[in-house]
Length: 411
Image (tube, rainbow, N blue to C red; front, top):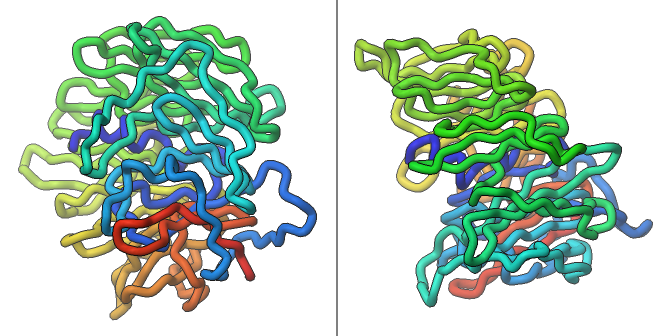
């Protein structure tokens, strides 16, 4: 899958400020979570980060959380379009946002755009796949956290941006957009929107004034990494400034970029093929394009998650490909640790949050220390896909009958 397509399905899922413990957006097996709370009750137990969950406390969330992305085997074959803020999950579908209290599983609000949204058009297919919804983004604007979702307007070539107050779960405002566009990433109060193919365009929107800051027709965005917008420039990639759209740097002319992955606000991971036909794995500074780390690599897609505590955790593998996990120092762009190493296997990654890395090793859940890679908890109960101080969200159930469930932490 090319990096332009990847940004459509993975855009900024995990690197946005405030998004609780985001992890494996696809390929996650049953018993994997995320969690949160906007105004948790006083009795709610809080652990930051949680390292142990009670498997018996699973609270089922609405079916929209996993349909149609989860297959009959309980694996997520497409990203779950969910944002978690404390104990509140915001479940985005093609036509609405469900606001769900993960402590009880109850839907507390249903937020819809002002204009009728186009349905996903999935028909009666039995195959698992994307749900046709935008990936929710979080932004801190004028003192409050907003959950953002874009919807295609039914029967129109336009879209509608909906902003939800993460604290109250109520719709804060909506904005009709001239083109059928999707949200790709956010930095501070600037949202990057884009479209692809013959109608390609990249647009920067100020979320405070709700005015377009700049727009570039014919430009496809492949990633938003910190205050840089990475766009396609032939075989290369160029970085534009989020603030004004000016070009900051460009990859070398003699390489062919294969993939681009944001790695927190200060780094971006690029895999490219050199003129000697060698595949290179590079960690670049988002501001300057300087290569911090470079090494030979195989043809594996890498995804990275900012744990929001000073470490960026990258991972690859799954299925027939051997798992690999490593942690980057955001300041230096060098690796703190990598697995497998010294006889230790790499866990199948599911999430990273506040110094903890969650996954499965040897078929069992495990928690690692994000800074050292050492084992932090051998029996966490579940391997969450998303994590907050109040809950972990994981796919659980029996063959052909799975739910996304919220599990309460005990430590």
